[in-house]
Length: 156
Ligand SMILES: [Zn+2]
Image (cartoon, rainbow, N blue to C red; front, side, top):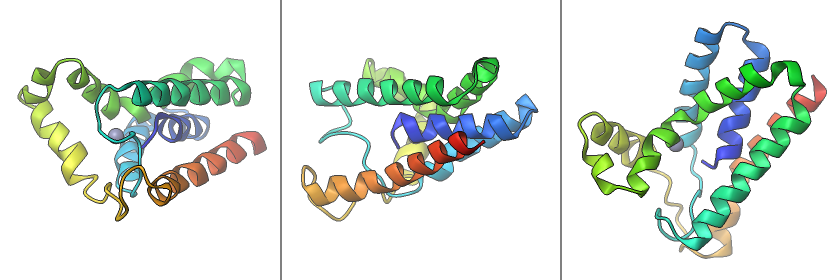
């Protein structure tokens, strides 16, 4: 999934669980649960392309804007760390886009396989990529989740 739903899920967890160890474990678990939902999170190929860079930057800007707009400053440190914990598996995978050797390292290789092909087996929606139906269905669960998370943070 995109960074915004993962990160905001961690932020919401931080607002509900004051124990950092428990909140971190729940946030980390949330990442894998959310990734198992069919979704679209890259354009065309999972590689560094201009379109994917624009999407990642825009996604990060949306996540941080919502964070600073909806979370009170006294919770910023804790909520940010738990938000990062909810995004951690994607950060662990990040170096492979710059150095393919990363994905061959012991432990990383198995983790990457599980986090990708195994867990996100249903990631490829039954529509041709670049089609509107692919993107609408691929973004829909993430938009719904983000709206739910934002409304939760607003209503607190
Ligand atoms: Zn992931």
